Every structure is written in C-alpha cells, then in structure tokens.
Image (cartoon, helix red, strand yellow):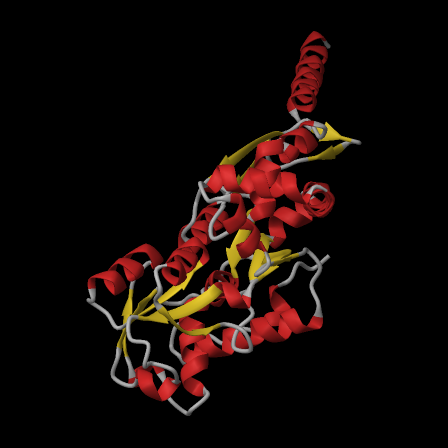
Length: 318
C-alpha cells in the first residue's frame, strides 16, 4: 500500500511541476517563451523603426508573460530560413518574392498581412540619359538583386515592348554593389530602391523607370500556419501593435519622421520626401492578391521557382 501511495505522490508532484513550468495566459499554453521577430529598417520601414524605438512589442508581449527579441536579418532567403527553422516566429517586413520562393520550395510559410506597397520606390537608373525606353536597354549591362521586386520590375518593363531578360546582360548584385558598379562605369544601369535610389537620383543619374504601373513593390508580414494554430493570440497581439503604430504615425507624423531620420542617418526632409512613396497598411485587398499572383507567375515563367504557386494559398488559414 505504501508503494502505491508513494507512486501516486510522485506522479502528482511531476504533474504539478510541469504545470508550474508552463507559461499560460487565460489557461492557453504557448509553444515558446520568447517571441523572436525580424527587424528590417531599410529601405524606409517607418513602422518598424517607430515600434522598435518605443518598445511597443516588448510591452505588449510582456503582458502575455513572454519575452521579446529583435533580429536584424535583411536577406529574404535568410529570413525565410530562420522562420522555417523555428529560430524566428514572425517576419516583420519580408518581400513577396521571398514568401513565394519559400512556399514553392514546400516550406510552411503564411502571410499574416500587408506591411507596405511602394512601386515608385523601386527604380532603374542609367548613366546614359539617352536610355529612355525598353528598346534602348537591348544589350545593356544591368545590375540588381535577382529574384526580387527589382528583378520583376526589369522584366515587366522589358515586357512592355515584347522584350525579355535575355535581351539584356543582367548581373545579379545587391543594391549597394549595383550602385557602386554604376558609379564606376562597370555597368550601364542599376536596379535600386530606398535611400540608395534617392542618392542615385540626387547624384544626377538618369531615371529610366520606376515601378509605377509595373509592380506594386509588395512587402508582407509572415509566420507559419503551425505557429499560428498553436499561438493565435500571439499573432493577434502582433496585428494589434501594428495597427497601433500605424495610428501613432498618422497622429504624430513629425515625431515619426524624426525617429526615422535619427535611426537611418537621413535628414528629416529626405525622410519626408521618401515617405510619400510608401503605403503602410496591414489590410489585404483583392489588388494585393492579384499582384502577388503576377509575381508568382513571373517567378515561375522565369525559372526562379520550379513549382507554380497559387497566391490565395499563401495566407493564414484562420
């Protein structure tokens, strides 16, 4: 009898310890103790900058009994890899092309909502002011990041006169290197965005085209379906904070501009000018899904992904 009582007592202690060690809010368990989120301030991610300076996510998640940490990961491929590994739970500002590529490769990645669209922030510049049309680009050497909104911009621009990427000499290169190559004369044109594009314009280079009417420059927020299914209220808090920050920016515009200027090292007047190029919002509209599908189709036809992707399947199943 003593043995039976001892076993029962040990069992009760084990279950009691397990229950004490489990973080709960309203008796809902979480699968993590810390929310790890990407922080991307470039090209001009004002909401991310404001919420980081104010500590909005730290405060909101502490109310759930959770810790919070930022990780500055700017590469789309590295972002989606970190999400797939479970090292990051939320991607706060990831390119639509990166989401599509990850999904095409079979990863569990789902869109939470929009972050921004900014077609005019994505640009193609040349050192020759006589380049004014897609036909003028034939045979030209063009540098820019492959598999991105900028790559899609080039392809869309060429397609307006039935040309393709094969009609130019396209070299895959990150934005800062592409600008440096343009400055050195190593390439004829460079695909640029954000402050680099602004600086290129200020230096007097020829704007061949921007993304207006060609691409939307879609940036998103994302997580995994598995994480959402097991931590719905964590994602709900994320959306709540995002909306709170957008409202703050609208009501405290000058303060938000000053925060961004300090964080980026840009002048307030430059930030104000660039800010007009961005539409920051979380709501998804039909046009966004159409735009994502166009991007997915472009990536498939260009051989950037092996499997076709249905854009409507990329969103969280709530």
